[in-house]
Amino acid sequence: FHPRCPHAMPRCRTEAPRLKVVAARHKSACHLNDAAA
Image (cartoon, rainbow, N blue to C red; front, side):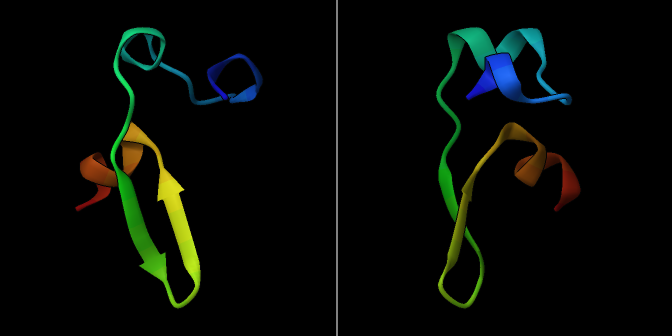
């Protein structure tokens, strides 16, 4: 997904982000999820 993401970082090209539940019936795999916590 990183080629289409305006928030992509170099890390996105080399590391797969963890899938995280962000709301009921909604999951996100993004390194920024960890930064927001």
